[in-house]
Length: 468
Image 1 (tube, rainbow, N blue to C red):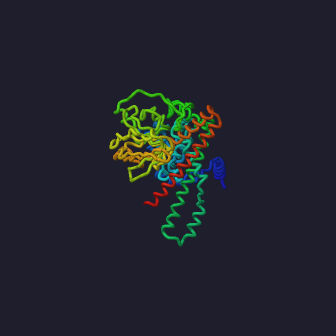
Image 2: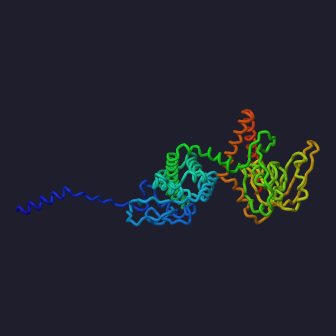
Image 3: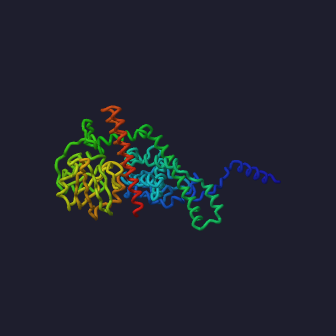
């Protein structure tokens, strides 16, 4: 070998030692992410969050494509790697009212059917978007404490995780074994087995995202996150549903110990515009504060707006046919709503309270159910007991803003949150002012009434199932 050949070979070996070997990494398929979750499950969710985020902002994706996250500013012009997130931090604009509506819808489904159907896609999209927001902006995510508190997102995440503890879900391995063993199954059974696997994958992804989001929020907000209900209770009294309503232990009224100041009269036109069917209050005193009735007693009144209103807070109600009901009440002569004799054939506003034994009664509080026509009025006295019995036939006025089916979904989960805080607040007041004995008696009475109402409702629904 010549000298030139040996020098060339030496230089080649030296360069080979200095060269950095190139790694040939095969890119991952677009449908699979680092955590092994199949992102194709979320391909249908790209536009779901448009209803939650402000519709006036520009949409962008983490890969530069359109997505359900909203940006307040455009990205700086720079080259993007297909395997890396952009270095700038997006600013999202969350719609609080849309988030509250979404939270109520999903929580109502979870409580009613133990599933998020038909809002499962929205739940998956929200959990992924909220978690991605925290990952992209670890210092200052756009989903702030006030939005979480207002939209009850902490309750939503907690109920999603509670569902995971109460519902037993088979493993995907067992489902595959069932599918393999079910070669002789019918086409419908085989189809159900095949559909169960992706549903299970999405369920597990939702649970994982919910757990991660809960950890992020607890670590980020710390003590205020655990004190959120106490803060909500303070807002409830100061500027919420109990505004201008105070507790008065000296009142002997059996439907409550709350009072309010009477406001100035308002025109009938303003009264008609203020209340829509489905309007909900914590108690009859809150309804008096807003002027739909003129007292906290269970009697027919004209209220502040000069419109007749009948609160049905006790007694029971039977359905005669759709939109036609018979209200029955027993008591003293002054409890018979005698003033309604002159209102037969006329329209009247009807409020229903949670203590009313009726399949239409709200689960809590007092609700305005719309206009009803009084079709028949009558009462008689029992000669043995001396008690009077009122029978009132009511027919709902057609073509109102909300049907009775829609109204029966009220109170919503967020309103029931306020009801639970209200009961705790009332119990605390009774315990503080009247002592432990009065508090235990109050607590026992509420529990007995609740059991009695549930038994009554169960019996009526059982009887109705045979008449269909």
